[in-house]
Image 1: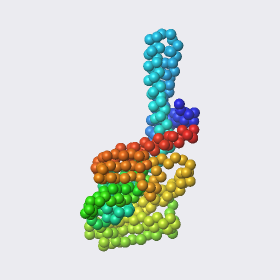
Image 2: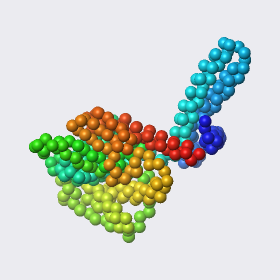
Image 3: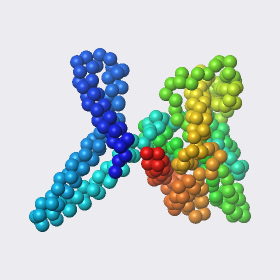
Image 4: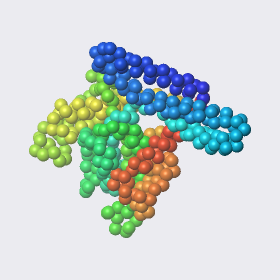
Length: 363
């Protein structure tokens, strides 16, 4: 059964839905397009919740009517009522669960794009090679999802690895699907350079940062910012290595450093670097706010800490294990080819279940 506070919230949403309908149909509603668009957005967000709540009310009414038939004295009607009661009760339980999920606090960044950072950790050349493998995995996932990858910065490693790669992944719901990828990814396999056939363990660090809608959302004092320009390295045509187009930004108070050298234009590289810097500073603010309450809540599917070992990729066994939710799959080849929606979805579901448990504990 839904808690009274949840019912009151649902009733409030129903009332708000009716208010918006009136506002949207009022004469001159489109005179202020910004307000009209905002109302439409709000209406589209609450309508699924309102419709589900109305369905719940309908089934509760049916359940009440069926229970009344139990006192009819008609054996046939009583049997029919028992069947209807069973169906209605099952449906009510499911609808209440669905409504609780829909009322869980929403991360405003879920619907937007995200920055992906991959850095080789322990393991030398093998770590760099695995960093490149992970970048391919996320690139293939992006292709499957219809997302677009925008390069920000890369640092290659011989013979075919990546010391570091930073990209922006543009698309609907990118951050929602990838936000639990932050942490240490461990690989166990026989490196190409290993002549004795011994299995090595290497690590790669992944970080996911939500895009900040407006750079102005985070104020940066110019005196706190150091801007360095240098010549880009790597592939890029004749322009590379001939002009100081690459940009490095250092936020002096926090020590956060970002670089961008993917574009031939210094101005565009600086704009990209600034957007990434803002995303990092914004995330630092959020992390600081959440750290004060982290000890008071159940950790969901991990802290998102970059030092936390979250997943192991065991190539000899074809196994991938996510340690946070104790999920093991034996489809490593498919996952490395970007078929990882099931893992992302399992993490999201586990997170929602933990949030729901916290919500029920606090009501």
